[in-house]
Image (spheres, one colour):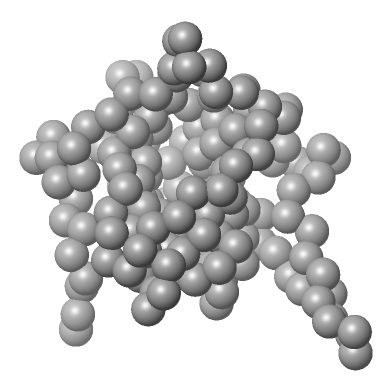
Length: 153
């Protein structure tokens, strides 16, 4: 898949021994790391779509802690060499990765597991309720050429 400009992924691997598992998610010396703003968890119930939104200042770093999520990005940036491109990432229990979502790229996600999915986000700036860096479109808008329904076949 051709990635949207400035989107980056870091494949993750468990370190396993007889005591259990350990996984490093994001380090300040990772190639994809920029800076720390805050760390939070959001959840979605099975089949729920949360999106679309984007930020003008911050980049997001998504990691699916539990369950599976389909995370979708849409490049609507004027002048971007990948304008109009859509990326889908199936992340979580069966595909461990960190996804860097650049500012101004529309994104959303859908829980595709049988139970609630938990997504950790580490944005580059802290949320400011007085001036939220949060711009939204409806999940099923016609402004984005994407259908959230499952693709059987």
